[in-house]
Length: 276
Image 1 (cartoon, rainbow, N blue to C red):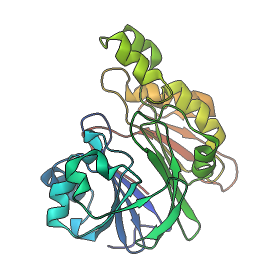
Image 2: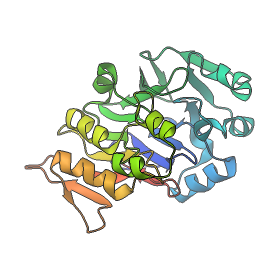
Image 3: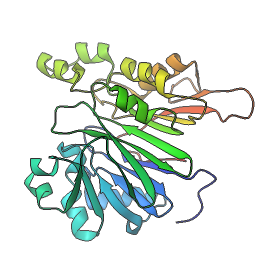
């Protein structure tokens, strides 16, 4: 793994959405995988597109047990020897997870893996023990939170002042309410154990983004009830950023002096993305 610039940590998002989730944090001693909801072949293909080597994965962390986050784990672990981490009770929710040697933690605990300090925090979703992460190394930090209907004070504290912030911006409320989903499913998505809307994510970003934050990524965007441009626009409006093009695919907040600009973008379901 070569030198990828002055920043110490990098985030590689292989896919984010209801059809599969997987991301990698690159640090001093290799890669830490977050979730694996794709086939091994697809993960390796997307890693190779980003210039990454599957042999560099040192550990795998779970946010929660929904199949779009864990369906590829058993096959991955048969091919690669990695440390496994999940919140207490999560492996027991699926037989194929229970068979694997997970190190279980209580959300709120911190540990070090592959040279990276990992701070965990509880999120709010309709699963056993959902978790978000803050990754830190040598003064650099990445905040990562998806699949949550709200953010607690502890979650906000863990996510604040990160150089890279990956935050769920799942749905546009108007699109959800006028779309094809039945009412019970709409209510589940909008509940405190569901998913963050664009507006909720933008309100949270106001509390989380600081002068240190260089990259803000909208995560887990619904293909039925949202658009990447809507998520980016919502963040941009809240933070006073300018859209970079008419499509609204990215936005930039220009700051005075030598402080780096803030760039806002959206993670996709089918296209891998590296953020350095």
